[in-house]
Amino acid sequence: MATSKLFHKICLLLAVAVLGVGNILSAQVLPMLNSFSGRTFTGTVDVSWPVEFNGCTFVTDSVILHRSYGAVFRNCTFESNTGNLYMADAGDGIILVDCQVAGCKELRFSCNPALSDRNYITGVLVNGEECSVLDEQEGIIDIDGLDIEKSARGVSAGPLIMVMSADRINLKSGESAVLTVRGLENGMFVGWQSSDPAIDLSVEGDFSCMVTAPAGITEGGTVVISAYTEYGLEAACTLKLIPDEQTSASGKKARKNRK
Image (cartoon, rainbow, N blue to C red):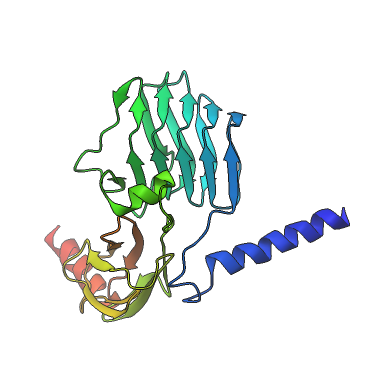
């Protein structure tokens, strides 16, 4: 029992060291911590760290991973007899390379998708037909021809996990948040964009950006801030805009008077 507790503590410290705190690993590649080859898994697999599977077979009628912290599947086979097969119950950062899916009607990445999810595919067949990415599927990225494809196939070394963090997620009028991406190599280009054109973006460094909310927020809402690279990796997070109390109260009063 004591050995088990010690092992768990070591794993926890390793996770903190790898995933980093603040900007500690802003310019370092985040590694996969587990690797499996030629294994067969039945049911949902529960892993607590970034993981890679090479030539593995998965047999399940529901969900492949309980949660994804970043996962690479190379030359894997997924067997299912359900309508929809989900790669994970939650989480993202999943890369599918030269994989085959058989039995299900449709392959999906998450049971609980988020606006900030980013997943990647290349060379994936579903029931013998190529799995294509539609233009409106912003969270799914076809990496065919991108630099990340070579790394995902194991042909060259390169980052496979890119994560974004924010020092705050709730913004009132004029307030700012600093967003940082981790997992990239030094010198990699990072571009930033917002789903709301009223948001001000100011690049703070190679891997960080300051986001400032507009003045006079009348309606609250969610804003998606995305970071993208020429290499192919992307990351995103959601921020919540908090309406001004006085402005919000005036709006409610005006609507009430119109009634």
